[in-house]
Image (cartoon, rainbow, N blue to C red; front, side, top):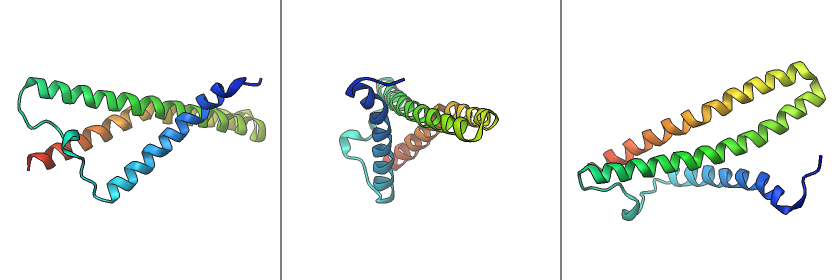
Amino acid sequence: MQIQGVGAELAVVLPLVLLGEVVVAALVLGLGGWQPPRFLAFPRTAGRRSRIAEAIGLAGAWLALTVVSLWAGYVVSFMAVHALLFTLGPAVALIGLVVSVALLAAIPVAWGVFIRREARRLSSRHEA
């Protein structure tokens, strides 16, 4: 089977590039002790409206990171399972498939834990 057009290549490569950029940016900014600008900081006003806006922002970040990570993980696991199938046989490919499904199922949970931890860390830093 051959995928036609440049659009199909972008559909496979672009999520991997985006995920790589996010990981590199997070490492560089996190290790460098970067402080977010004031307009990206959590709202200091108390009230229901600021909590709702904060929750929507966190949910949007979680959704975007989860979708890109799942797509990139799917592409990588698809290639890896097929490589296992054609080199080592169906038994090893089945094990690879089970492992890849477990890893893909853990991605939303992992991003949720990470985003909540960072949100708490940033909000406690801005309150102090």
